[in-house]
Amino acid sequence: RIVSSPALGPYDQFMNRAASLSYSFQKLLEIISSHFVPIIVLLDDLQFADISTRMIIMSLLTDTENTPFFVCCYRDDDVKPGDDLSEWLECLHSRDIKTVQVENLSLEGVNMLISESLKAFPRITLPLSVQLHAKTRGNPFFLRRFIDSLVSR
Image 1 (spheres, helix red, strand yellow):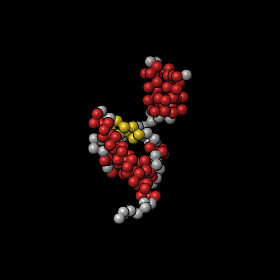
Image 2 (cartoon, one colour):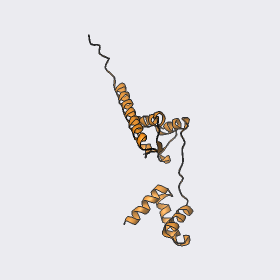
Image 3 (tube, one colour):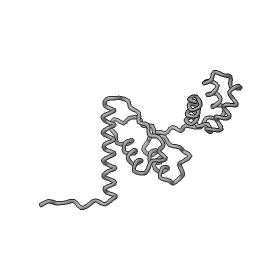
Image 4 (cartoon, helix red, strand yellow):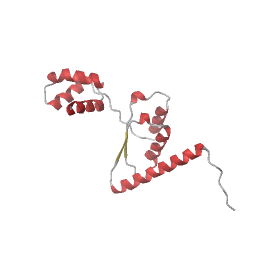
């Protein structure tokens, strides 16, 4: 006599797929880290990740045996109190996962970067720095991309 299991509902099917995907990623990272130590996993724009993706990321951050170094990036101006992302971040903090906040550069910081890059006096690069600071709001990542796009032209 064949005993069949009851049909899984959509939620159970989703949870099975999520657990399977999480397990696959964990095994992949374990295999890679056993050959290439240390490894860094960069996960960018987490503010756009859905809840199931964040669940998988959480399991990778907490369950992998030879945990690689994870760098998770998100735009903090997209985080609103009480939304899914802020609750997920609070859960990360409760698990003793360290955070590093990258602040925007001041106008003086942008000018120092530009003057050193161009090997020019800060008073000469100040007008350019004012424009770059206005365009990027001092965000170091945007500033770098903007400078790269100017150089490539």
